[in-house]
Length: 153
Image 1 (tube, rainbow, N blue to C red):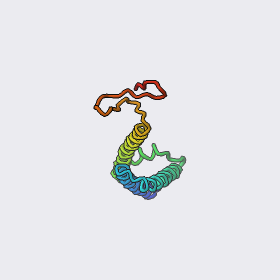
Image 2: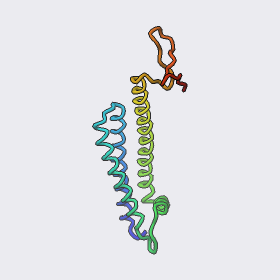
Image 3: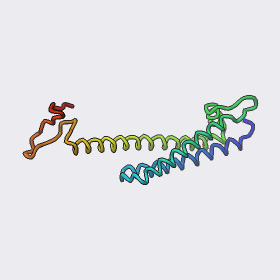
Image 4: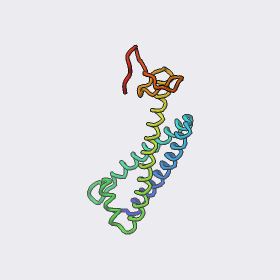
């Protein structure tokens, strides 16, 4: 790499961006848990903008010249891992990226749970339970009928 300081600047910027993303994801999880959809809408918008920015930065970084050719992200990783000065900084970046990935997976599962819970609530309100878990006043299980036909899971 011609300019080590240029690469160092890029890695530090990515670390900062991913740390900001992690903060957004933590706030997103809180909003999901509280079902605070107003905050969630704002956070999702911020997250999408930041992810777009990160992607464009990585694309721009892949265009850096390494004497004769462009350096793709895989080559950049290898270069950083082999360089004593860059290796710890690259590792710090990878920890933050991994934390973002894990938090995003948690949030994805929370969204799935909220969605399923909401669908189930609406089905119960409409008197339709796809799991047949409706009980009558005596506590006995009641067969749910939809259009006159028993519903089975």
